Image 1 (cartoon, one colour):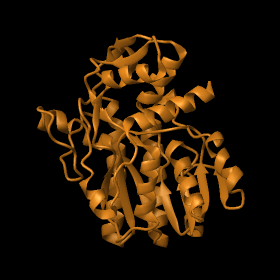
Image 2 (cartoon, helix red, strand yellow; image 1 turned 60 degrees about the vertical axis):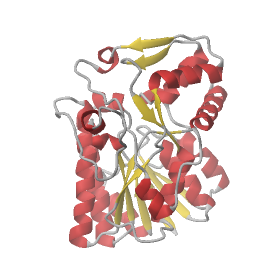
Image 3 (cartoon, helix red, strand yellow; image 1 turned 180 degrees about the vertical axis):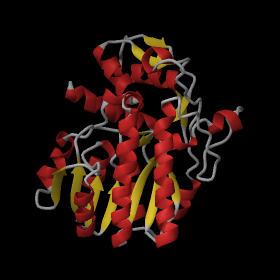
Length: 332
């Protein structure tokens, strides 16, 4: 099978490419390298030089996208602005690249009827659990209400754009029968994830190894859950390449439902790295600007994807942390 991965030089995309190549498929990666890196592809380029093709280009290039989609059997559309800090710094890029690029990919995929997976985000749920579940008992299912803040708060621009992409994909499916499926990623972690864009675990690990204070924003009581990238790409592969039944028009949460507070996460990283560094509580405004809004919980219900694929996370948080620490140590 010939597989096209947009954003394939990024963190998740490069791991997905490895998975597809190891299964014997041909892979083409389209990436503008704005946040991705050819270094992420070195293992695959070395192991599979005859079946991996890299094209440096943008999903905003409509003619290029259309040509590539036509040449491939299936498409993973992962290309996106990455990280809260970059979203806050480049809101216009977030909107224009996100919408135009996705429109080009989905238009071509609908025209040629190519099975396509659209990467979305748990950010679309916004602060739903904070308002609907103050006792902290619920998890977010694919049918949970979405509770976003105002677009005047730049934090929510990313979620609004992702939700618009979902609406576009669903509309193509309903009106044209396009074989599209949507995945809402929760926090996904592993080797190759850069700390440059505000990702919490790489940032905390980097600080611990360097002997700097570990930055924790707000009170640190906000909770998150973390999925190993290897678990994530296993689900992505099953959904699009070998689904037990057609997932077209469906939305799936992809994450790990086991929560941990960020302050506890920082403490665990200190323990695993034997770091003497203190944990430093930092007001959100100091890093993200005045009026920044965060959610206290964002925990997935993965019942649907488990029932469809039999998929569940295999890696524990400690597995993830130890692997990220080992990777960061080698990179020093």
